[in-house]
Image (cartoon, rainbow, N blue to C red; front, side, top):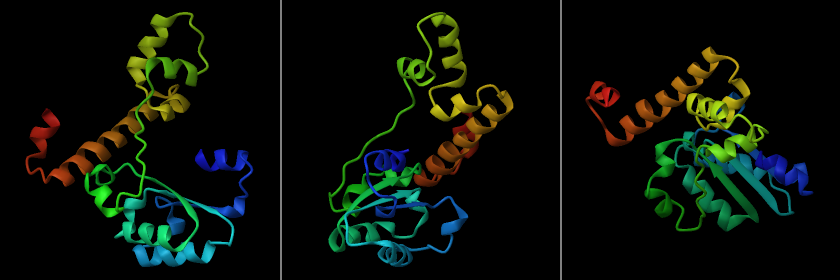
Length: 179
């Protein structure tokens, strides 16, 4: 979405480098040296915009980011869902040269606006909000309960089972799941 925003503000496509590390296209970028080399080869002389999605999948990615800030005229945007990126270590890794923007689920008011709902039948719409939650992607699939359940399970497995358990080195995962 941010890339589309840049394009709509007359930023040329060739001035935007967008890498989503969940895509198999970028499987060859394993570490910061690979990332640095890839981005360096894409940079033109003009101001560039670098968007890195799920950057935590690259080993020592922060070294490449720090080098980009020193070596090139780049605006850098990093996204990640992993608890690693939420760590207080992030400010140390990026030498205090970043602005964090936290993304939260939609509030009920935002949910109404996002779905282009009017203020009629708010009870029904609020029950829908309670059922599906405020994750924007669910709006696109909410007519398919099986797909919604799968999506929510994937999020749960990523956040609870992977991020929380791994980051906190929790041994008794069954107890955490029960809680």
